Image (cartoon, rainbow, N blue to C red; front, side, top):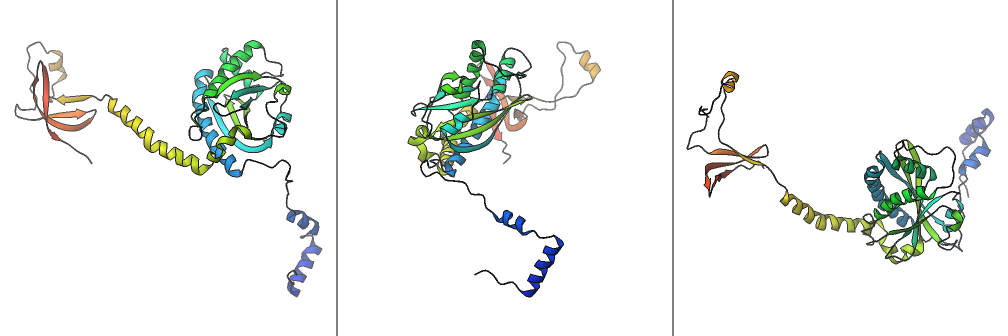
Length: 325
């Protein structure tokens, strides 16, 4: 049973209705909830956790693309992950137009292929940049020539190889670009009813923007689907950072060369004396024979030492260590 209104509430409601401040039709529309149909014959196999993890993985992938593609295109490249969603492969293929750029990638050692769709406008801009142009897309879309597809294939191979690092926490991959399709009718790689995850990224090459869609069928990820969750992904990344990365970093630091210099003494002379210096002239410094020398590592004073010789070379012997902790 609904709540009973008081007489004062009834009067306020009638007053608002007569003044036009309250419209009962608008109230019903505002309270109406949007309901999405659920197809029990084709249930979604990708949970929100799976889609969220895929966004994290491809955000890493987007950063790699932003770093590596400018080397080939000689222009600033910005890549941003827009969203991820679950859809059937038929829904994905129906959204494709002709001509289209579809990179068929073997996701070895996982069985099956994934699809990388690149906007045709970006394809034309990439070809223009690779051939020395400003990177402008065509005003009217047309079929790609064999030479243009060969040029685009080089960039697609780079994009394919960059998939290895973001997926290391889930599966060690050896992806390989098998071919590029330009006709959506020949893009039937899985059954139309197969569920897929579609990750959409926005790529900006100079002033040209376009979308890149990565379509991953469920049967490809099924063997490692339990690892596609944020808890496992973050735990793997943490272990990697605390282990291998630290060892590699320490090894590189130990091999780094740093300048070390011992200051024998300091003095100040006039410019006139400096101009007229001759061989045999003596410059008096402010260091006595028994004084220790200052030893600098880079620009930091780290040691004091006494001068001497070792075999046929001058040397210093460390006496004091200066610690600035």
